Image: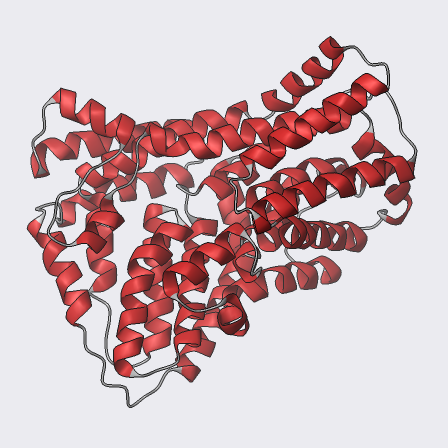
Length: 459
């Protein structure tokens, strides 16, 4: 997007006023009116178009800027289509239900918080959605915590940490795919590089939850047993259904492009579906488009399995197109260039660029409350700065996730914060100090940025 030529160059104060006004529109709309981010983005697009017309720019020029901005997201959009296919095919092929069953089978009476963290990590990676993990498995664990009379705040913190670990490290996650696509690196290269900060955060969090876990708890696993029995009754749980996961890992090690990897994984899931749950082609195609529609007697399991399909990606795809179109206008109008030209003098070292990335990601999450925009805007804004200081762009993708994806649930008025509070019944203020993994993300990114450890320089 930085290749978009600025057709005008406003003064720094003028650009700052426009950006501030846009942030106010986003914040008020999302926080006060609880509207999806699409609507305030559309309002901001109209605002920028009016500003451009006042600057005597032709509408065709502004429209071209929007098209150029949206073009930057086409790679991610194709990936998201195949993610929708993969999720639905892995459900009807038994891969995802089997992974869930394995996760539920690890629960024991000891180290409750640590086990909650690990299981939500597994489920999060399996389905690639933090909010779905929270709304299903998370609700079950909160019920168990209530029965055990243990801290709901710590339980919620462990659930949120595990869910966003999965959201960050899963190849099925839209934020992970978005980050790699915006920066322009391979999906699995991005995941491998993120492990350098994510694994230390995981280990520290696991140890902390193990220490905090009540050793004399007498947990009732009835709800988990119900989950397992219901999953078994679907006839989707079989050891051989893990084959697509094994193939996915092998292809990622071989560095096969993400699009081909997802396509191959989807085909394997479809083939397995003929073994575990024979379906006619008409039904398979319907599931691939609309997602799997389970019909078990357990509503929580239904919610867990009701996923996938191309239609499940429409919300994210439309948001990406609108946000990048807005970004294209910001660059066409020279607003971003004006602000960053003013900041460029201070962004001349590795430390300052990493710090600036973290502050920007956290700032957008805090002011706007939307993690997609935190990733999109931070990625586009800092791409040139990483090239300037000789850092490989995969460092930017990692910093965007460390300070963008995992920070959103820590903000009480954010999309994720509001959702989690509503579903779990535990306020953001209560679970905030116990969401160790989310708190460690930006801290470790700054630590490695200032020490220079794990950073990759351009060749």
